[in-house]
Length: 253
Image 1 (cartoon, one colour):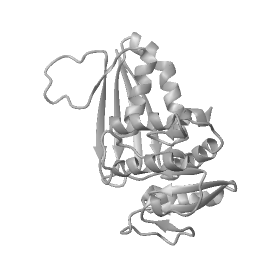
Image 2 (spheres, helix red, strand yellow; image 1 turned 180 degrees about the vertical axis):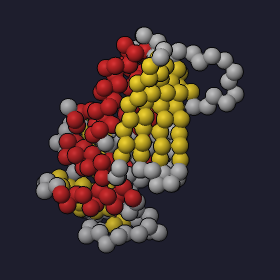
Image 3 (cartoon, rainbow, N blue to C red; image 1 turned 180 degrees about the horizontal axis):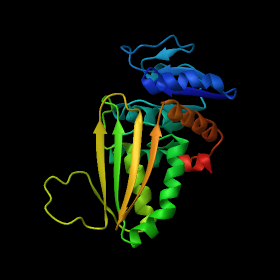
Image 4 (cartoon, rainbow, N blue to C red; image 1 turned 90 degrees about the horizontal axis):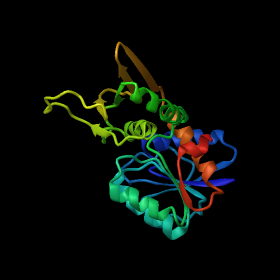
């Protein structure tokens, strides 16, 4: 049995992970942490305001909090020697570096998107981007999310851009705004656009635009369940792993 602590248990994703955990015989949610002003939603496990107050022992932390809360989470994981699945996006370069440092002591899995579909798409992009780029295709990425999402562009859009760049083997420039540019588009760039509105769960579209032909690859999340299930599968994967930095590509094999 893998004992899980959910950091950010009362948010939309935290609630989804809590509900879907019941489908996993190998997982037990032993505790959660969230702000006192959030709605607990009738959970069956104890909820604490601070990580320092948690009494239950856990094998893995699933972090679905905010970037501001991640520093405390990393300190706690280091102190307790607990593996962590970090789903939170919008992290600073310093936080990403700190995650890398911590992974030398405990097992860490960090991903900007826990969806198995998105991570399969990343594999595909790495395979096809070199050929398409070399034959003249330009690349743009458009992501769409609900109005409540704080960071833009999404962590997933950056993951997809990184996959394209790795596939091309080139140093690609990421361009987020062309309003001040009056020039032809350079070939070695990836345009990234963000849409925020309504209740869109998550859509990501990668557009390869060539001469007289366009290839569009799109992933649409119809429910947060795809991310929650990915986080739970990642927790199962990480539970018996030695220290190191892992990704969802390790989970899907």
